[in-house]
Image 1 (tube, rainbow, N blue to C red):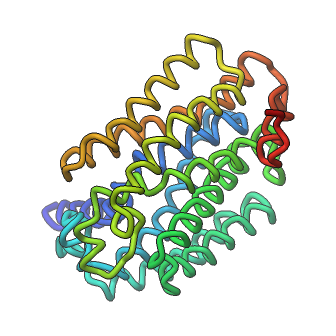
Image 2: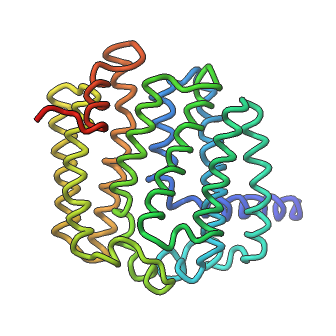
Length: 309
């Protein structure tokens, strides 16, 4: 009995250790991407929710293990509770886990469709580019790669959640493209709180390279994106006002409050703001009941730079 209890306790401890690799991404990635998949698919059945969460989490885990193997010294400063700096797992064991996850993610994706397998393979390639090939060292490539991988998670999660695992709806496609655009232009909101650790590892993030401009470049885009998204998804006046007001508040915080403690709190508000707009495809389906949306022409005009003055 004692031996069984010990083995069960070790299993739970090992599972918790693996969970710790992804804990910091639950708010900014797992929850919003899951909400997006449910909204954009839409979800084919309640049971499919578990499959969707598992697919997203496995691919997040693959990325995070690869990332945390690379810079354990940074995590000792910024995130000491992670498995490697806390001593719960060695770099050697984490490396084994990192490469074991590759066939697991691909095989799980192959159960659904060839298209989903290609999404999983794309996530693997971008993960290697970001981590093994130092794509995270430059601020521009870091933001772009992270945004593209975020889009891969959304596309993959949506394909798992949907009845048809081979293609996205028009609404899902536009929503994923908008998310990549929003994330790539506001992602550095997460870098302010980690600036000290990033400096010590030689990572040149936007807040480190341009401490003043980066504040402005987050304080203005968030309110502007809030207005744009409210128009695109045709929000009612109350919802639009609330979302835009919250976006203005989040942007203002980054510009006015600049301590590490303030940046951590501002990042939490940013995560909430970012998660909220993932629900807008569901808002569209609920109010209009059809795929696509009337503001598609507006999006195309703005992206092409042809909006009338």
